[in-house]
Image (cartoon, rainbow, N blue to C red):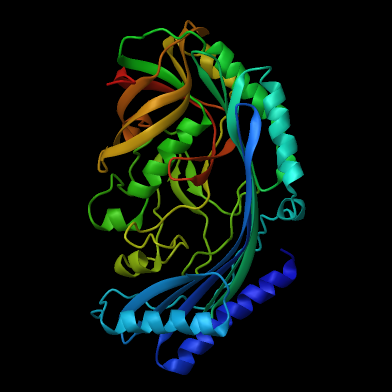
Length: 451
């Protein structure tokens, strides 16, 4: 996973385009090549039970032959025989497809931002380095049952098309995610970064164990509307739904989005953007169409200011692509890559101190959208919920089901405070999201976890 592999990947992408043009000089073609490694160390009951690693070699090809568009991919060795088979299959598929009147054409030549979310030590990480962080997590549990994973990924991505666009990039990611468990409660700990050396297994494990112990022997709470302090994983879940179903050119164009550009739809404390150049983010700086990712403000001081686009939705909406096309996601439209909610100045303790009667919530899970236009989502709490009274955490409560409009939860006047604890997490749609905790005026809890 050294610089040479960037050259190799780009050579493969160029080779795919050359083979397409040799077969049909009039065909439009774009190729994305991903190579790298993904390694995972799993643990349960305080022991590592699985350590696996895989080498990635993935080629995505899309062609347009007289406006008839088809795509396919290849996993495994990318020799000429395999590439020829891939190309023949895509051509066969394109020939039997109807002409696509909304085909936007290929991305033009453009430079990507000079950003490199890469850590060489993470790219070369050995299993022992992940195991060491797992050991520290387990030790921090102090005898509690523990489970989770530590993963490291290194990826080189190259793109080429027949219009002359050529880009390459690379990225690393490391994640430790686990739970500690008592007889009556679970607590979670998470950390995500471009660098494995940033992960302190003891700190993440201590966080999980603290939540588990503080959440032991929870009691019932009557459903209803409560003030909430939502920790970063919950906030990331909210942002994922807002982006995929809202700040997305396709649902906006189809009338399925809540977005009303230029209107103050959110509290003035809220500013949100997708920004791959943020130094705490991860990922490469262009999309599968070869368009450089642009930093896009979707909410600024509460006012909705923008949406994300692919080339297809941009062409249809008289806009420009923001570089947010994703493989196998054309039917979804633009998918965010690097979400950032601007943090505030309040430590988590101040957020709790500001609650008269409410709940502190660690995680959401099993969240499902009920109405994209109003952003009504239903889901469950997980890994620790506590009642707050007069600014103090007083008791753990059992998990609750909620049914809540995510837009209403962040509406003007609904955000009481934003934490200073911006944390990079995977949540919701597995979108890397830099999110702080939030103190919100109201959240609608509709029942216990069983109904």
